[in-house]
Amino acid sequence: NYKLPGGDGFKPHQDHAAGWWMYGQTLHISCLIGVDPADETNGALEIVRGKHKDGLLSPEWTELPADVCETFTWEMVKTNLGDVVFFDSFVPHASGPNKSDKSRRILYTTYAKKSEGDLR
Image 1 (cartoon, one colour):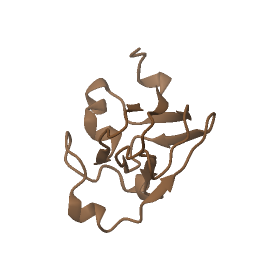
Image 2 (spheres, helix red, strand yellow):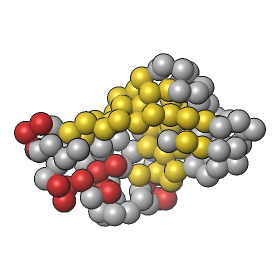
Image 3 (cartoon, helix red, strand yellow):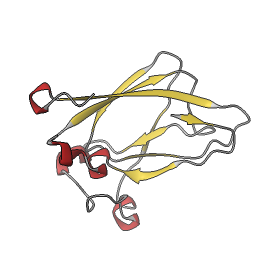
Image 4 (tube, one colour):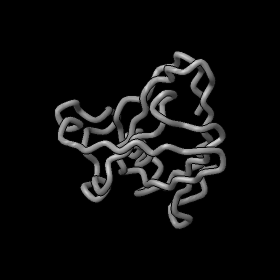
């Protein structure tokens, strides 16, 4: 995930809504690895704790509705080089734009259940 200076953010969503069920996957885990510091100036990850337990909160293939997002308490996850953050495919998350004059890099890897197939 590479954000150039002035790059846009990502609207609130859950990864599961992006079609993972089409491959027979019921859950996946994403791993964020910090390459550059990430904070409010350059579009750090923002999450909603505990809402992953409520399942899919929007129709498939859609972002989370604004009226739903307004009820959430969003938490910014500031990271530094080498920090690791794990979250599952039902965690509501977003990120703001990169308002800094430097690029912001984050590496994401995603893991699925072995029992649900090897889709590399």
